[in-house]
Amino acid sequence: MLVECICDSCWIQECTENELEDFPRRMRDWLFNIMREMADRRELSPHFLQLEREAERTADETKRAGTAAVWKFCDLDSQPNDRSVRVSIH
Image 1 (cartoon, helix red, strand yellow):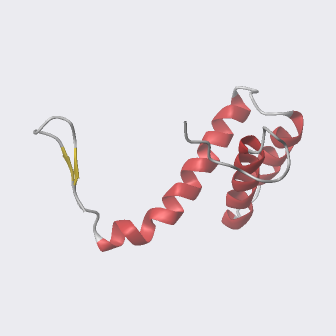
Image 2: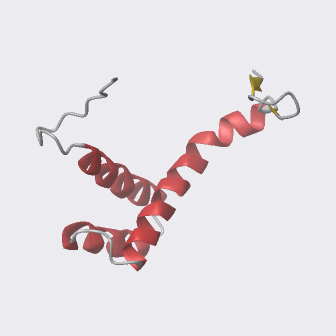
C-alpha cells in the first residue's frame, strides 16, 4: 500500500513482509519506551510509576508490554471512567 502525501514528491513505501511481521513487537517496544520516558520525567501517577519500575527490572517482554498496554488503556479511559474507551468523532 502506498500513501500519497499532499505534495507529489513524498511517498511512504510499502512494508516488506519482515517489517509487517515485526510490527507488533515494535509497537510494544514503542509504547513501553513512552511509558519509561514519562516515568523518568515523573509524569506518571505513583501507581503506574511503581508498575513501570517493576516492569523495567524484569526480562519478561510480555510483562513489560502488558504493563504499558494497561497503563495506556487506563489513560484513555478518562471521561467517563467506566473501563470502556470510546472514540468521539466531531
